[in-house]
Image 1 (cartoon, rainbow, N blue to C red):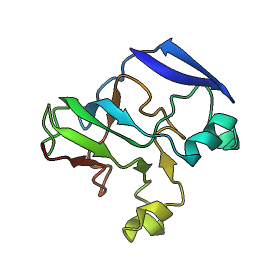
Image 2 (cartoon, rainbow, N blue to C red):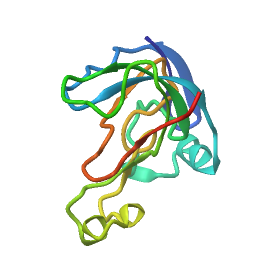
Image 3 (cartoon, one colour):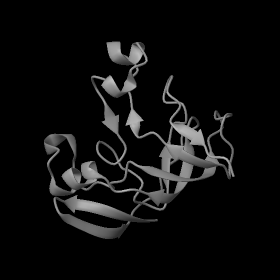
Image 4 (cartoon, rainbow, N blue to C red):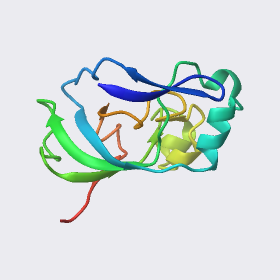
Length: 139
């Protein structure tokens, strides 16, 4: 599949990359829309230091359509339109255990700490523990 890959600060290349391997607890989303924000500018400039490693597929604000679901996924169906919360909480720290996921002490995000949505497909856990990261969009 094709993806916009940040190969080093301020250098993006369109590359052929492997499709995500879908785990039993994940869904595969084909992004239809992906936004750019100030965070993406900082990532592009390399201002996240060691947190972001290159090469990286950016893109943490996105919506799309569910392409496939893992065998353990029951709350999301193929074909549904979804938007994705980019927060990937640890589910172990005090903030996560209290339901304050944006205060996670080990906070990770799509497109910053791991590959994001500037690609033809992205896989993710629809529940991420107690957090619902995929939200259905009504047709």
